[in-house]
Length: 226
Ligand SMILES: Cc1cc2nc3c(=O)[nH]c(=O)nc-3n(C[C@H](O)[C@H](O)[C@H](O)COP(=O)(O)O)c2cc1C
Image (cartoon, rainbow, N blue to C red; front, side, top):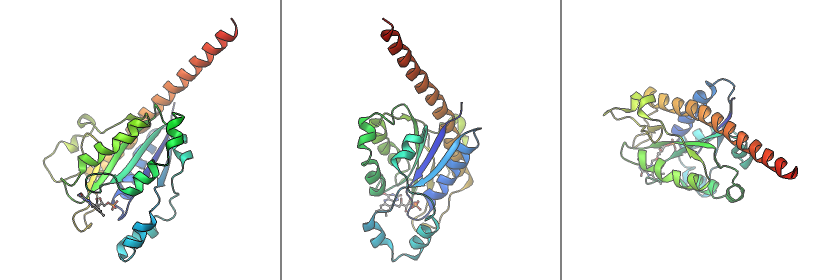
């Protein structure tokens, strides 16, 4: 059985977007998987503050045809990959703002038992590669999602002392202090591996949810018959 994977990200300067494209590619490599790439909308205050930067304007223009994420995208997905660049080791307000609109989904348990994973981008190697992912897991756990990382066994490229992004917690890239560094192949490989793992685990969990649902229906029929 194949499942649906949503790759949803926020990006100011394009690094997280590039990683999102590799996560998408990895998910698509799993037979039968449907994939949606969606972006989290910019906040008006950020747009105002950043619009004097040509590079920011250029990247936002390039991304404009990628649809903005909706709650229905979250409902549709069996696996969700979140692209979250760091802000002081934590998630950006844009991502928090979107997650904070999911109260109704939480109340109805609509994201429970779905697979999820996070990929990140930081300026520097110790600027939040690990903490951004770990702190961003907290709301996803509240929503009842099941966490998928990128373990060393499947990602030997992260077992390194070189200056590249990525950890067992999830893929990552380094943008550099001035944003000029671009994701390197090892970082993109980890991103692809998150996509394919989410596709596989998401499909298994979908199967599990459907079996549980049928079991409940069978139980209900049994009671009706008594
Ligand atoms: C307000 C703010 C805070 C940031 N804090 C950090 C930080 O603590 N550590 C770090 O390495 N990079 C930090 N950055 C840099 C961003 O993480 C970097 O620009 C981003 O990863 C690039 O990804 P993008 O091209 O997808 O926007 C910060 C950027 C901003 C605007």
